[in-house]
Length: 329
Ligand code: ADP
Ligand code: MG
Image (tube, rainbow, N blue to C red; front, side):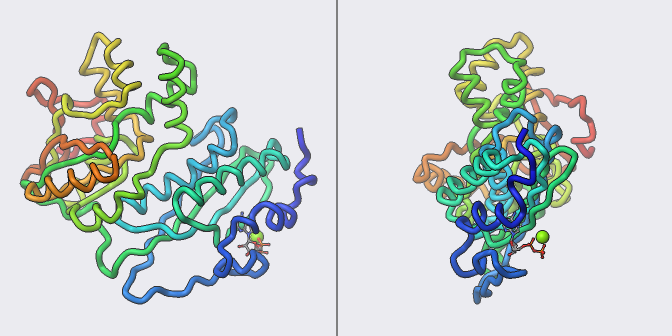
């Protein structure tokens, strides 16, 4: 195992992180701070997520995808609010397994995603720990003043939508832990999704213009819609038969005998990083147009009511979930 001494803090910053830094705002990572000029007419939107080895990622996960996932889960939060990302701060708690090659792999993941999502590193901190590795990232985004889309704001009569497919986060974790039997290309697709989910950054402007409330799906569809219902003082009703599945998700689902139990797994599993949002029914056509332009799947799965909490129906009947904390009725 590589010794942490081989990859000292200053070497890591100078050789690995400085090339990723924003050319002006990061000050070459040679100063004590980053300085970002304020943008007139815009609000600064910030979000932070920390991940720990053995808790949020597996000790066997390659570090390039660990870095990607860390950045992407934060970009997903910004997208859900309608904000467009421009930069991030990063804290690395390297463990003993993080020698120079591992740190390089981590930075390779960041470099690829900086390009893919149009963000740059502006600063951070670097420490070593005798315990499991951990990383924390603060993403920064802009949104026109006062336009942030909150969890609150859903109105009775609004429709409920989700982007992409639901359940691949949970299925991907099962796949990564060798708990699924599926064709190898399906397993690979699910593991890829688990390791590096796709944040819907390109849909942020549409959320900003058309959503009444929005959240990204990290805890699980039902739990996250529960947050929207609670924040808005409304009810959310969804139809489990309308839940969109990926090709791999559908292949898994087709092999289940108990369809309801299978769907319950997919909607309570989490780690999807799709957007769940509400919008006025009259805006549905515009939403579909914008989704299509971006080749993004968009599915209407239910509606907002004057009730409280989330009601999910299967075969027309309300389903109660084992994790009852997710419903607030
Ligand atoms: P301090 O002594 O104040 O903790 P550091 O030596 O940690 O300062 O940081 C020096 C510079 O390197 C700062 O600009 C800081 O933002 C940057 N930096 C340190 N670690 C990271 C990192 N993991 N990612 C990005 N920038 C970093
Ligand atoms: Mg420091």
